[in-house]
Image 1 (cartoon, rainbow, N blue to C red):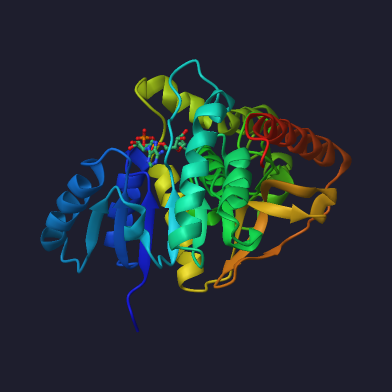
Image 2 (image 1 turned 45 degrees about the horizontal axis):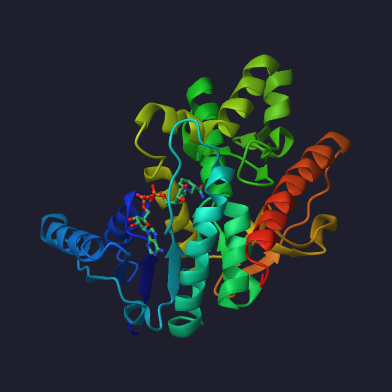
Length: 319
Ligand code: TXD
């Protein structure tokens, strides 16, 4: 069976980490694309030279020409600019929307059968724009944010309770921003809902609420520490988990920015929901029942995303 081909559009902090992780998991041949000419080839060469020391069979190529992503099975998009301290994800919209138009054209021309995973911020608006610009079917264009937000939530819960992250599950809905909705009653420790963990006295309600807020602020916390850019190890690991579920048809149920066509009462917008990811891409959106407080928080998050999408339409009327 021919090796799969994974194209990374943007070979910066996240792109380079994506390439290393894809090589370590031997997911397929990796193409590192970047508008800065030497970045792709430089990182491809460096990771390829790390393969012998890791006992890996890895094929990596760097480029700044879209023709080299031809027939990619997966395209992961990080092209654009990250935020600096004091900037919100939304501040990146105008700059990164222009980048999505270029990337969408490249994908439409060379990799129209790929699964596209968008990472560029502001994520929910950028993945919506990328699907429009590329013209790919909506089930083949998804956004990575929920897996990252859930991983952050799981890390904080496991650290607080002194348990393995393997036995904590998290459920995050909504946009990748301050309005994201970590659902405590659908998040568990060994199957015990966090709401029961509080009732049992294993964790206080105040501590759980502070963990929810720290999850919302997870990106800003790292931007504030690094000063020069944003998180990249966890975002890369999250996108690779999504790519793996597609490439191996694992049918994982993962939180991802998916196109809603009426689910959750939302139509024509991308927002974070639980999705079955398999060989068909986003194969099924899982609709859970929300209580009134959760519904209110979800609606607020959808509203924030729709506001960003309206801003995109004003900047690029053809969208
Ligand atoms: O959960 C999430 N979705 C977020 C996403 C988590 C963390 C970071 N998030 C966003 O990903 C971040 O706000 C940025 O918008 C992207 C990429 O973050 P990264 O940290 O990888 O940024 P870098 O290191 O600046 O890399 C971006 C690369 C850089 O090498 C540029 O030269 C390249 O993108 N770039 C382009 N490549 C192709 N085409 C164009 N037009 C282009 N413009 C810049």
